[in-house]
Length: 177
Image (cartoon, rainbow, N blue to C red):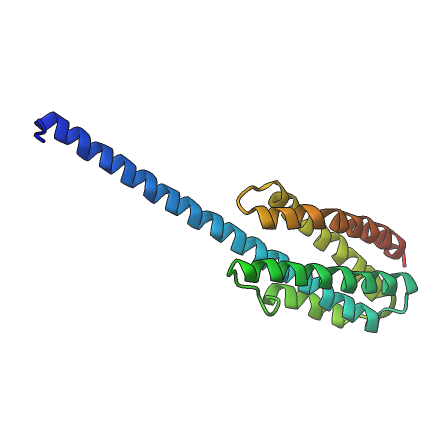
């Protein structure tokens, strides 16, 4: 088969376009994987922080409603953390074993308080944490990058929204004390 000079250039151009499209698809897949890894990391750290802060609440609070809320955080966030870790491990995604320095500082700050001051600080922190968690899970629930993580986020989101409502009420109750 003989190609003319212009025909050969067309074939070479087509190969270059197809190679570029394949490279773009590989880069897009890598970006989606990074997005999934980021979600797993952020959600895991947030969940572990909620559990750690709740354990502090069980020690430092003398309020029955704060202690009940803390028990609920331990139960719900531990369950979500286990489910997320299972999904992530099945995809070969790293699951942080510990919270990062920023979140550790939040828990340490709570450890230094007791009584009514602790209750107000803890409730305020729970409002802030759950606002961030709801935004994170809303974003992932709307994503189609990873259907398993999106489904996990959609299923978990109502619980986080309920936690946010509970935290709002707790903060209002303990703000004036």
